[in-house]
Length: 378
Image 1 (cartoon, helix red, strand yellow):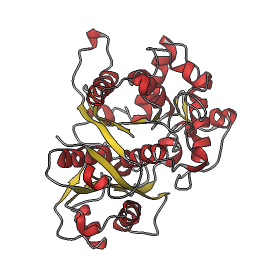
Image 2 (tube, helix red, strand yellow):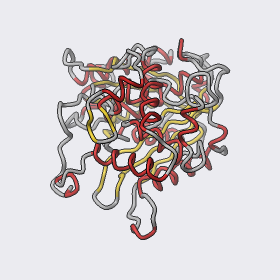
Image 3 (spheres, helix red, strand yellow):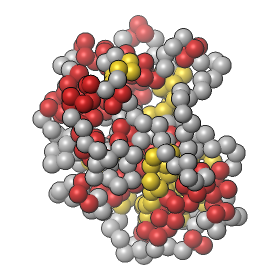
Image 4 (cartoon, one colour):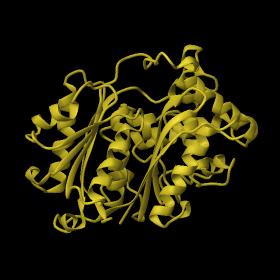
């Protein structure tokens, strides 16, 4: 397998984008990635397009708007890990020599209200929505470990502070702990501000060979690990959470691929669809000892200026969560942090290794359907 690098990144503004078609969102991000890479679109060999709700052949439709019709295109759907899965497949294509330069775009325009459940989702039919599921996980963590509702609120305060410095984020206003806790209760203990907004958006990256990376004259950002995992049934008698075990196993696979450990990561984007999601990520990615996530919050380890800033883009809680775009937006943020391109939210000193983690989907009895962990470095 050959080394693979991120050569260019691009974003479209996240938010309610009723002014454009879905393909136009993708074109915004794709054009930005092309400009950033300084490469010609004629050099692109293949494209992967991640979208959860776009319908048929979205990739081919938006590539035609980019002047790239005729390029082999693969459309990807994998719930909230859709964009990250598209990136994983693109990485595999370059690493195995099937392509030298690949365009990856993640995008979605989200409808209002709850995501439609499948007929087989009997848990959803009984009312176990994602806010409800995460609320149960939050209550369990609070009962078993040293975590309070104030700690959960402070996750939002941190991520909104990052989002206020990110021009493409949906929410760009800082909030206080009191405002977070005072917002409408959704599923106790999670209030409205502790739930990610459902928005439209797109993110893109060009990835390619080391030869191309050395031609563009930008800091080299290498993909050290690309790990994809799937949830599996674990008997309740074992006393383990299948959701947590999936993230732990995928993270361990990524660390082994990269030849590093959690102690080496200096910036991270995690799946903070709900405030408790970031807390669980601290545990499951090995950023703290099991049950000690609150220490990272209280000691401001994961804030700007801390040892391990997390969700520096503002995360899903501020940037928003268009399912197909989220995983790619994480890749864009980590790449830009490694290149010192993040403006007022730039980490100092410049990080050497960054991690992006997202999870997606829910299967009755099994739990979380998918997890992706990527490690990038310079």
